[in-house]
Length: 297
Image 1 (cartoon, rainbow, N blue to C red):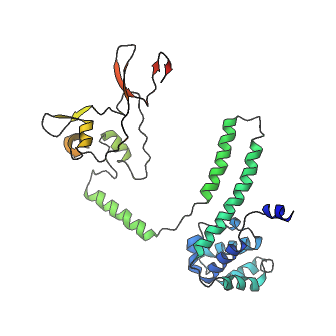
Image 2: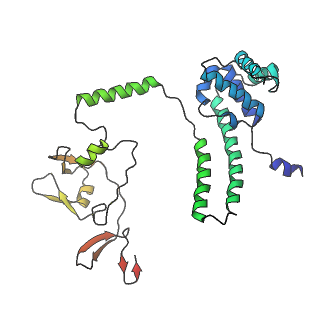
Image 3: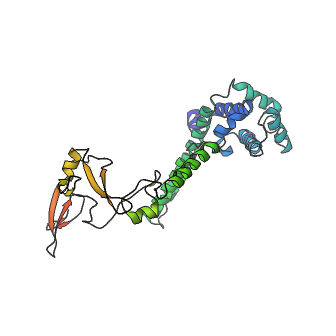
């Protein structure tokens, strides 16, 4: 019976909670490492939630987070006695000799909170399974959303020095002012697209989509213009000779020499020659579905 009860106690680490709070009061500067990562509700013990909430309030007011300040603020809110009084706050500070491991304590506190949230969400998802009035797709979306929200809460963020960000921004603005017309990102070679996107940015997710036979995937024996006057090279030859010079259109729609920026070996693919009802022949890979006598391939 005792083992069954023990297994039903929610995950928590009171020791890590104490060490985290003690570190905050021992070294007020350490608050910058955890203030945007740990929330008051992450603590399992109610008294620890109240103490951490006070630390957050002091931080927002730019006031020092130390034993005296925390005790005074708790007293103003009428919570000092309920959290254990000055003696308990002193005990928290004496638990840790240094605040060097505050991030480790924070990870433990957050991790236990994630486990408790997972237990609660699992119960809620189980209830969704008995809902026969909604479509399974909608219920799955809701279940996935709840699980995803837990994973997002577990992400650790950190403060960024505005000095560093401003310096990088000023350097970028200065560079653009000196080289007018230069794109901020990587040119695509399509002028209208570059004018809209200012080139491909580091944070962009680019999805290439178009109708079949528009050039998304080109066979290796396709010939393209080489930089050697009047010569053509197949894509396979260009890949084999990685220093091959190619002709391309720059942002001003002028022909210029360039080199392929990268090659991705995706292996050899079967190529099929298809003939449409109108008599047009198209080369496609197996990734493109097409209708045969025996059905779709």
